[in-house]
Length: 380
Ligand code: F0G
Image 1 (cartoon, rainbow, N blue to C red):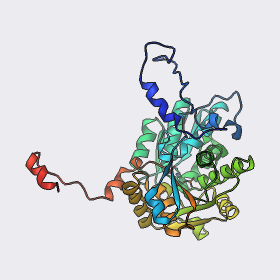
Image 2 (cartoon, protein in one colour; image 1 turned 60 degrees about the horizontal axis):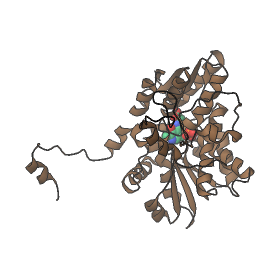
Image 3 (spheres, protein in one colour; image 1 turned 180 degrees about the horizontal axis):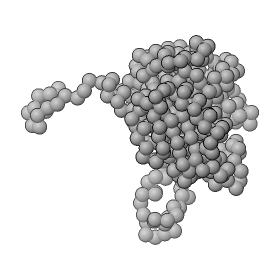
Image 4 (cartoon, protein in one colour; image 1 turned 30 degrees about the vertical axis):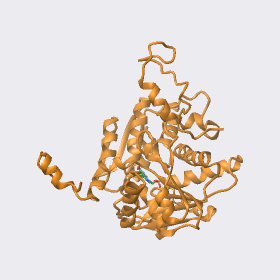
């Protein structure tokens, strides 16, 4: 059975030191990863995934993200809360789980290029994995509404980036049409391989806890991830690797909450740019996850998202991006029965969006470069 352990991180020390007495490993050539037990989600969970024995796997050793205990949050809600910190994936978001599968499939099917619409993270991940596979990558992003770090990632990994004078929903509509009419493979979560890869997040949670949690809190944008986690929990239960299923609790931002409202939002608006989506592709399967699990899909206000975002950084020392904090904002808003086991997915790293972080805090004071001046500013 796969182990959701942290051996990936242990291995990094080994790879930087070079011992002359090979064969422990060979510098500048093949790496001896005998101590690296983690092989990326495709190899770790191969028996759950649609992958042929002969397929070349495109991986950056994604997955094996930690389930960080959250003592202050647990105290606040009187429950045992864990944070699935997906910001520690190779490109800093959960998208890498889906992208290793989508790009592996595209590569082995002989694709030459992939395409996606994105609020940022999908484009960063697609660009990185496509470059790794030697495939072209085209991304359509809403102009002025993606975090700087994500834009930098897409560009530095060599994607062709088009900034659309429109929003994510319009970008995805164009991408779908291009997928039909041009020789490009779509790697948005409408590609079922993305969902297959992303469901491994649920496997890791059950591996780490020994059981599914009582509640699973998750941000909802295009609704692929809630769909994927629910699929993962069900598959593990069906193979007797857990005996129960969590209630799936999805949270949209109030200004971009089509599923909560029951109709598409033409001009979605939220500070959480990653989930600024008005017409989610996986709408129906998100509703299914909610009803089958007896869970909920609700909305949280931008102020609640930012409060949770600051709380996580200052009290739990976990820095996520604003959209990720929607899961915790949801938990703080609706609560859970005392003593419940709760997992909140933190979907992306806080460093993706430094502008928002800085906007939340007083700017640092400027002082003269002298001992006296510094001393005078400090309460020591
Ligand atoms: N959190 C982050 C950080 C995201 O980037 C996204 C989606 C979500 C949550 C919502 O996940 O769409 O599966 O419901 N980002 C997509 C993108 C839309 O283009 O990067 P979802």
